[in-house]
Image (cartoon, rainbow, N blue to C red; front, side, top):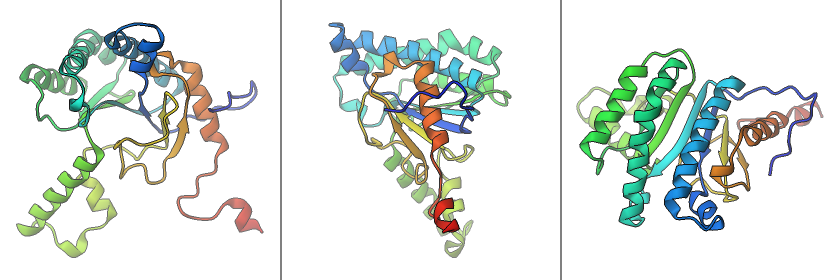
Length: 249
């Protein structure tokens, strides 16, 4: 659990924050409510977090909305989640556009209804090039699938002569990922107390700082985001090197 920032502690926002929004169902159970109500409360937390990210000066925000493994959930719950995505785009697109937010939705489109695909295309086209927060929603997304898909496309380009196998390095591989236009996340937050990646941004999180928060996602507030950023600011990122203390000794 991150420690809140001290009153005189300067808050330096990370360039890119990624969040695994976990705990909607457990929040609903604790409130003796249906799981759908937890997901609806989770959408409200998304709205609040996007506003907070803009206010704090975060440039990139990536949210894990629906994993490719979530299709294993009951059919009614999956349908509810699809409906919430529809509503979020329809109800919030105009406001997000006015706030200069650029929307990107990553993940496979397999199994998605045509109207959802159309809404995704509309949201991305309308906000493309906006100068404000770059909001990415990982929907029907899986990190392992993303890596496999990138490997397949690299292999195809190598086989056709577009790419020399010996030229393939980490930068070229990353250019084939769905996040090729994004910097790697500096800070990854997961709510609800769980401490695992759950197939989210596996490649991109090699040197990301993780902060785990006990609060369920519907209870996530700007104060939690500030506390996580404060914790991030207290850490020293080495990227495989030695710490400043080690170098000085």
